[in-house]
Image (cartoon, rainbow, N blue to C red; front, side, top):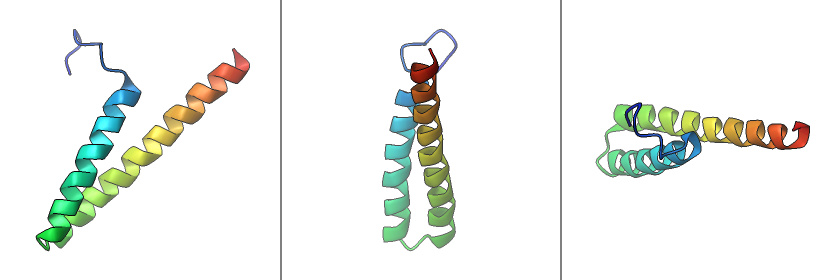
Length: 65
């Protein structure tokens, strides 16, 4: 995504990233690529945490705004 392409929100981007990472970590596991699978799992978990933080932040803004 470039600076000129603002049609995708941060939350939407995180959703796409989580889906792709999940697909890739399953592929790595099926091919017994342990280290790559581990790294993808870490990235997947970090992305899930980022989604949770985004939702909590948005929810906090709704209750205070």
